[in-house]
Length: 352
Image (tube, rainbow, N blue to C red; front, side, top):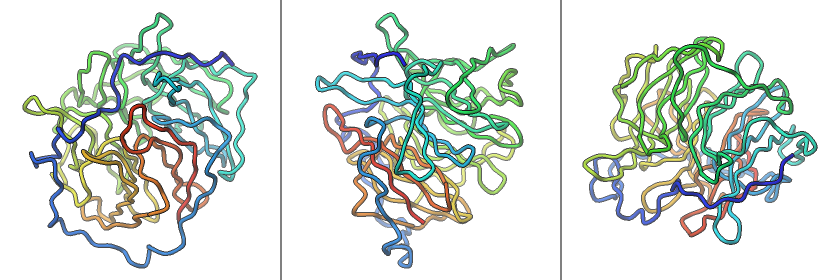
């Protein structure tokens, strides 16, 4: 594997000074208190636990995680060196228990060093789509390449045919109705997007809509739940001001989007993760205007939410990844609350 590329980032991913940013429709940046919060008392017991505080892979954030062939896999991401320079990664790590992690260090993965990409499992293969990383010329740029692998070791670049999505990072991707869907994101010129693309094979892509009903955004999460695609929260710009979001949108076809709520019960956030577990749509952690979060919000209908878990032992984080594996929700890595540089993590947690 190539040695890590050390490069000072020219693109700001983590936005500092967040007290100047607003949350949703609340220009004060404060969260509405009367938001119908309900705590599931039965869930707040000792079911949560730390699997490992120091996994074999290096600390990282803005990586992805997927499950394939009864293994969890952690893909790429970045950390910081002692001078605050970003170290973009190109590794894929695998584990069957969250404790022991392995990678093929002698095999160079074919995708380039990157973070803030999207990954899905489709047609029994891993797909890595886009992201942000060094281009080999000293610049950090957004990508629109697609890589696929059956085992996370041997990778093949897919060459799209016809029209294809533009480069982007901090977008989302899901599998729905036997298609890969790519939603929103931001490009190298900081142009935010609310377009939606789909593909039945990863080669030929269709622009489903160039301007969805939800606002242009990045750092949102997407999940398939109740036979719909859901887009949750994220980060946008409105009236010349950066705005954190806690709106929730859904679609049965990727063309027409319904605003399920403009302000969900959870505080507005970005760089969070969403998974479906026990027939619940769960929003996990993420970065809010004044802090990161360590909460899990659950919903049986995608709209009305309760705090499934607020976990004192789990340090606050954003830019983490989450998967459902072995009948548990897993939370992997991410970064802590605001500092310069951020402190990334390589811990692994699981909850049932």
